[in-house]
Image (cartoon, rainbow, N blue to C red; front, side, top):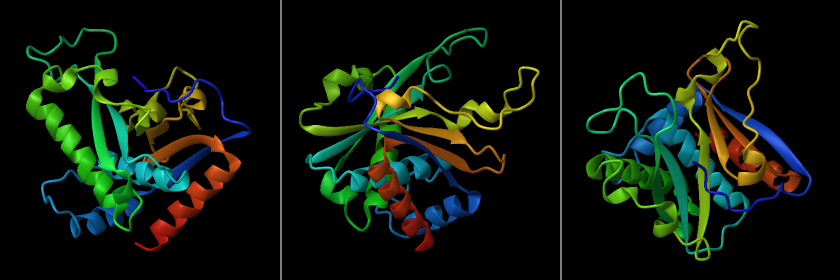
Length: 221
C-alpha cells in the first residue's frame, strides 16, 4: 500500500540509492538515544532509516504544510488473532500513520521528532491491533490538502537481494513504483552487512539537495 501524492513522473527525474551502513545506523541510534524524550522509543534500523529519509525529504522540499505525515505499511499476517495460516499466499497489509509538526521536522532535532512519531505510530498499531481503531482507511485519517503526505515503499525484511531464480543473486534491485508515487523505498543493503538502502526518484535539484543534507548529517555524527 502506497499513498500517491501525484500520478505523473516528475520532470527530468533522477533515481538515487543511498546506503546507510551499519556504522551509520549505530551512530544514529546512539545520537537519538541521548535526545529522546520517550526513552521507550524504537531504535530499530527500520525506524532509524525511515526517520532519516522522512526528515531529509521535508527539509529538501521546504515543506510548508503545518503537519507532515508518514504512511507506514504494516504486515498483518502474524499480527491477527487468530494468525493467518503459513500456507496463505498474498498480501495482508494495513496502514499506520505517523504525524509530526513540520516545524519540528525542520528543526535541529528533526530526526528525533520523526523517530518519536514513527515509534508512537507503530506502538499504537500494536496496542489497538492492526485491524482495531487504527484500521480506518488512510483517507479517513489524513487530509492531503492540509498535510504533507510521505510514504514508504518496500521493507528491509523483504530480502530482495537474497532472491535467486537460478541466475544468481541480483546485483541491484529497484522499485519502479516510486517513479510515480513519490514514496521513498527501503531495502536491505546489497552488501549483506546489515545496512539499509534508501531509494528515491526526484528532480535533479531535489536529489542533489537530499544527498548533500544526508552527507552533512552523517559527517556530523
